[in-house]
Image (cartoon, rainbow, N blue to C red; front, side, top):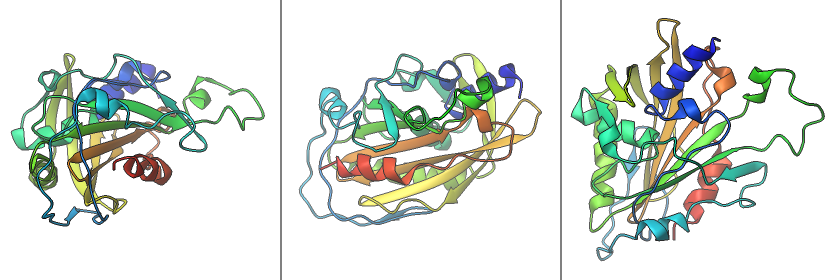
Length: 262
């Protein structure tokens, strides 16, 4: 696949922010969090209502401490990131307001109404088990990279955010236009998929993205709520772009991150 197309698609799939993240991973400042209870939910979204007292959201600094760190997921390395992901929702524009939560979730931003969030990246650690050097640059990029975002909300803000994502999957099933960092992109299809079922509720969805007329590529995102905290997961494999294969969100990463949201 041509490098220009790869960079273009990365910008599309991760809301204009991944074209510079082929190796380094990403992170942005952000929001807050609280506590949860039992896990449920998958696919088009499943929820369990909570009668627990409303809690206050955590700060961005508190969320940073809840992100996965190196050594917590065997076989994966954690990168605290750099400045390639959008810092603000104002940098991510869609042509359908109902699709905004979907675009924000894939950019590591809070999908709901909160001002701050925290994010990092978790990628396969093939170096420790590799028996030979990568044969070419494409082989070096043949790694699943997952961008993880955390956000936290006051009151029932987290539940409202999950509903916005669920509603967005339906409203945006026919696709939407996206502009980030001066790049115009087109998501051609959105569909609910089977999620992890973790947390108090979760929803997973796949987005088909136009590759500058070279076909489409499919990307997976999952959004999990535990109490007042929402975790978003978006996975990409740059070497697989244009092959018709979609990178799956690693179950071990989702499980480990959700387990930290107490």
